[in-house]
Length: 283
Length: 178
Image (cartoon, rainbow over all chains, first blue to last red; front, top):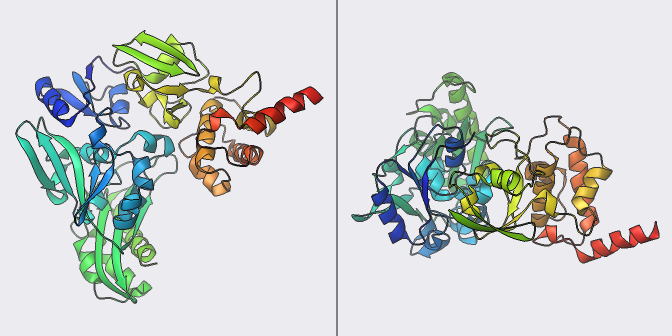
């Protein structure tokens, strides 16, 4: 189908984008890579009056170091995230999850910030952002504020972004030397996770010193599997210990039933995929 | 809104509505009907073209987003009447049944080979995972991509659509001999 009519503006700086967003009012929408928004427009599930396209805002692209954190520009494409040497070194989990997003064509256009702001519970980047304690840097007419990932995802397709606010950067603490894995279960022809598990571990010898585990699509928002994390820390990375820890994966989750899976099956998947993800991360 | 886009080597300037999809612009304004619309839901990849050297689904890009960019479609691959090596490999390997997915498959395969000049079977299948063949003719498609990789060695280069000069000369020499 053809999208409904809208006005379009393509600012070239963050300041201009924030002003354009404020001027456009509540029915405007920010266009990042467009790989979720344009299909939504085409199906006429949304009809914004104006699109503010960030495609020409060069300052929103790229990854840089800032002390003990990486700063990932919101408009950095999935393709660039997967190939970025800083992310590979300090936030491997994000690269691994990103490499499973959709398909090569979509990864060329889709962006890190766009995925997070879209907040699809089946999106693969929310759980890693949560598990790694990322912070969302947002800009609006009232200035800049920082929202922790744990407060950013509010509900289905809903974030803590206020009207007129723009997600500009994502700050991710460095997890140098950690090992990670993202394990997802999806239908072959559609890459949306039925359930996904993001795991990062710091292992010394054979002992798991630290662990971060996030779950995709086990609730309306990504879920941090703190029970699994607690059960892993201090354990030898044996199949038995990992399997026992993975039993905690369903704590605090509220999985939905849909055409792909009922809630009980999602709970089953969460345990199995947690076990696989942690095992793979421990190498 | 006025846009200027270079498509298959020719520069066009047009007034377009912001809601016009790139695939509609290519087909309905420029007559580039070699690029097809398969699913209208971003799943099938039939509408894949290259935008500034990278594959995209042209049903999920607005024409206004392509302003100032270079687009290559399936119609821009042949040079001087010679098929691109990937096109020829699809022909030689009978890598199509109904043919509807073929333009997108070829455009995505070229993108894949630009990233990985010698993909194994698994890498080919992952590289074309965004392209669906509803005839399920994947076996010969995978074979064709690997065959094309062999033909295009050494190194298809970052912009494979600009055909390796040796391949062009070889193809022309072949024609002259016959």
